[in-house]
Structure formats: structure tokens, C-alpha cells
Amino acid sequence: MLKISMVLAIVVSMGTASAGEGILTLPHKAVTLSNGLKVYMVKYPSPGVVAYELPVHAGSRNEVEKGKTGFAHFFEHLMFRGTKNMTSKQFGELYVRLGNENNAWTSNEMTDYHGVVASIYLPKILAAEADRFANLEFDEKALRDEAGAVLGEYNKDVAQPDFLLEEKMAATAFKVHPYGHTTMGYKEDVVKFTERYNDVWPFFRRYYRPSNVSVVLVGDIDFNKSLKDIEKEFGKWAEGKPEAPVEIPVEPEQTDSRSADVRLDKPTQTRLEVAFKVPAFSTKTTDSEALGLLAEMLFGVTSDFQKEFRFEKKWLDSVSAGGGETVDPGLWLVSLRLSEAGEGKEKELRAAVDKTLESVRAKEPSQERLDATKKRFKNAALTGWFASPEALAKNVSWYTNFEPDLGVLDRIFERLRDVEPKTLMAVARAHLTNNHKTTVTLHGAK
Image (cartoon, rainbow, N blue to C red; front, side, top):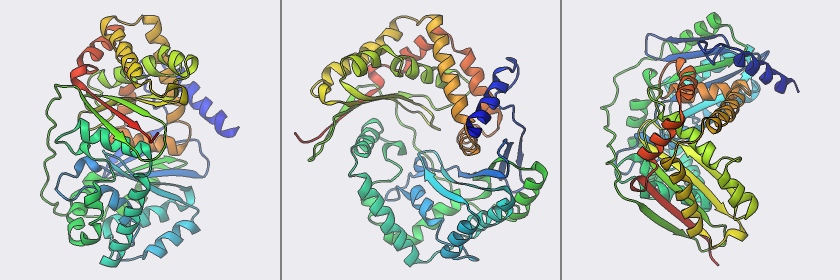
């Protein structure tokens, strides 16, 4: 109950802010150290607790060298293998003693190391994190052990229909850009990780350097003390001479409708995904916010589409839509999972998706409908962002990866306010069209 009350208090305070005030009304501060490391701090009413994130601004998007896909995710594992000063076991034992919830994840855009700890232990966590970022060390045996774990994870993933659908969609939609492979990488690359000891270090030096990493703290913190602790531990991390940069290829504009099918040799529910090429995330235009509103308006739980095909005809048991938060032009997807009643209805559902999108390409939605969607969209975002120090830290990490200042959070909602009915029609006409469309279906054995 305390947690719910806290969230409501934060959201109410924001709801009463004037249009000229920002969404992030909690005390916050951003600093860049002399070595280029960016620091973002937000005071959150979580007595005695702080969430931290250390995002590395490199993900599978940065894997452009042949034979080296999956390296960003591989380092998510290798970063737990010890340093020049501390073994992997000692590192793990320290975090257990401090009661730290420590973990990591990788996406197309970034690799993020995060945890939640008692505020009194934050200096020790910062010291340990600075050590592993500046002094990572492991031998070939450790790499081979971790390579085996990653291969096991890949094999587990390929047993999941949703992963196979994601893999096929990426490969079909993108022909040149690294978005054409998942964060796991291609299997032919993953199976050779055991041989990559000398190859992984250039990737590490290229991306794991102060100017490409941030420290995010959200919770019960003192700005001056926390900044002093960060400067003490991370300030001595030298930028060093980076590896030669690699150029991320630009995906040619898609001018034709594409499709693919995945067939499994085991029973599973049919999946259908319809994706469209959309611009990179930016608060310089309203495109990103318009695409989010279109996803909610056309395919959200209150939409006519869900009402007809999920709740009345019961052809679907899962509907989701969205995307477009990528550093480079990416995908906006409609994802459907068919129920038993919907088996064999893929053609009708594809037509229904097309008809739904055509409705907003042909006619502006009403202002009333847009206002209601904005309200739902904003409420969901606010309650999600500010649900906990961990949630807010994650969103700070995510959005500063695209635009490296805390003002990006405010600008998202400023652009949301700027969206008009004609904006939605214009964005749908520009991007949610057949020449930008890729459709993938997945079928199980009968």
C-alpha cells in the first residue's frame, strides 16, 4: 500500500503542474565528468534505497563486423567474470553481502547493468562497478565457459516460437542494417564464441569507455555526496585511445511489401506480425509520439480492433502494437497470437489490420478520440515511469541513450501535447503503408 500511495503522490504532483513545467518534478541533476562519463541523478522518495543503472551505449545495432554478431550480449555475461582486483566469485559474494539485486540486459540499442541497494552501501557498489568497467579481466577458460552458457541460452531461445518470429521478422525487414539480427546474434557466430578471445577485446575497448557509458542513480541520495563518490571511483577511469570506429550501414528505403513464414515441427498457436519501417526516435518531431498514440488508439485494449477480434469473435488471445524507439529507423509492429477459434483466419486478420490502418490514413480521427487516447497514454507512461526507483532509473537510462539530457523526458510529453488529429493521419500516410510493410506468420505442426 505504501508503494501505491507513493506513486499516486508523485503523479498527482505532476498532474497539477502547469503546461510550462516539466514532467520530471523530482529533484534531479546531470553532470559530465572530465573523462566524458555522464551522470544522471534523481531524488526519489524511497527511504534508504537507491536504484542504479550503468548503460553502455552499444547493443546489437553496433555489431557490424562479419562473424561477430552477439558480442554486445556476450559482454553482458563476460562483465561478471572478474577484474584485475577481484575474482568473479568475490564480486558475486560482495553483492550478496550488500543485499544488492544486480543484473543486466541487452537490446538493439544498449547494454545495461543495474541493481537496487541500500543507500548506505552505494559507495561500495560504485567502487565495484568502476573496477569492473575499468579493469575487466578474464582468461580464455572463463571466456569458453561463458560462451557455453550463451550458446545454451540461444538454444533455449530458439525453442520459443516468439523468438523465432522475432528472428525471421528482423531478417526479412532489414537487408543491410544490423537490426537484421537479434541481440543473441546469428547461431553460426554464437557457436564460435569459444574461439573469440582475441576478437572480443577490440569490441570492449571501442564501446566500454567513459564517454560511452552513463551512471544513473534514482532514490534516497545526496547529490553532492553521490557525485563525490562517483568522481572518486569512476574519475580515474581513463578514456584511453579508442579502437577505430566502425560504420553502421544505412538500410536502403523499403519500397515493396515483404512477407515470410515460419513453420515449426511442433504444435503451437499461430502468430501473425505486421511491421512497418518508421523513423528513429526523436523529440525534434512528433512522429514518435504519434506512432505511440496510433498503437494505443487502433490496437489497444479499448480499440474497435480488440473489441471485434479478441473479445467478440475471440479469434485472438493476445494483441499488441508499438515500437519505433530505436537509434536508427526501425519497426512499428502489430503482433497477434491466434486462439483456437481463430486458427485459419490469418487472411481475414491481415485484411483487418490493413483496414484499421486505412481508416486513419483516409480520415483524421476525432479530437475527442485523440484526447482520450492521450490521457490513457500519458497515465500509463507516468504510472509506469514513476512506479519505483528502478522503473524511473530504467527510463532515464533508456531515453538518455537517444538524447543525452534529462530534458528528454519533458520533451516526450511536450511532443505528445503537440500531436493533432491531422498529425496522426500524416504519420500513418507517410510510414504505415504497404511499401514499408513486412508480414511474418508462424505456424505450428497440425
